[in-house]
Amino acid sequence: MTVLVTGGAGYIGSHMVHALIDAGERVVLLDNLATGFDWAVARGAALVIGDCGDRPQVSALIAEHGVDVIVHFAASIAVPDSVRDPLGYYRNNTVNSHALIETAAKQGVRHFIFSSTAAVYGDPARLPVREDDSTVPTSPYGSSKLMTEIMLRDVGAAHGLQYMILRYFNVAGADPLGRSGQSTKGAAHLIKVAVETALGLRPTLSVFGTDYPTPDGTCIRDYIHVTDLVRAHSDALSHLRSGGKSLTLNCGYGHGFSVLEVIDTVKRVSGKEFRVILGDHRPGDPAAIVASPARIEERLGWRPRYADLATIVDSALRWEKALVHRNQMD
Image 1 (tube, rainbow, N blue to C red):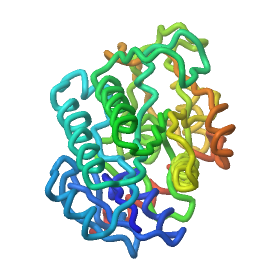
Image 2 (cartoon, one colour):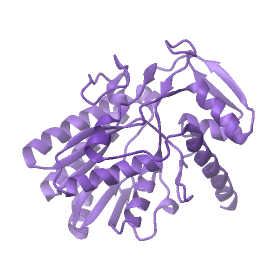
Image 3 (tube, rainbow, N blue to C red):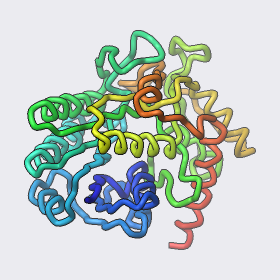
């Protein structure tokens, strides 16, 4: 049997494909390469260029490769962009996911792992946030993901599709073996941007909002190393294959860092000073969001290995240096 990974040439997806290949799985990945890279694909995985919303193409892939599991990463992911282009996000994240889930159900795919987000919680009433807390997204991005969660639950109940919904908090860092990392040009992830600025690839770093109700006035986020996140997917796959029931789980460490704390860590780890510009709030950004990881630890036995901000930053910095070298060689 085969695992189909949508968005498998992108940041998180490419790490997942490496982990699956390392584990001896048969893998086919579907990616339109809008934000992914063919060179990031692990050897032994079959790369198909296409769109997860293309029903005939996905049906053919499932039949040809004997797909029994879909791991769905393909999506647009930037909160500010979703505020500017809500219809684009509903098309790419919700409509395409509808097509993929429908095709999976019709083709008899047994298991589905969905890449969701902490943005479904909006601005939570309590921290750390738990999976059964209210979901009131404050951005079209969060809403587009929540709609897909609802569809997946309903299809699971109607058609017996076993699923895992993993709500990511802020993913950062890179593969410890140096095989992949965040490579998308213009990516807006804070650690990525801060590392680029430390290396002189950006002239300045902007901080969006300094008067939030937090200790230093900047937003607080729960940062999770991409390798720990991928292991959560591997644990989820094992759970489903062993007959475990469908679950919705947070993927985070249970502690957060402010924007200014992240910037200070990047400066310390890199040994570089850089210019920081303090600006206004961005629409859709909650003041603070931190995961409760209790459920994923209890249900899957998942434990983080890289739960240290300096470690996350160091891996991102090493990847960025390697990426600069790669780009110079191209």
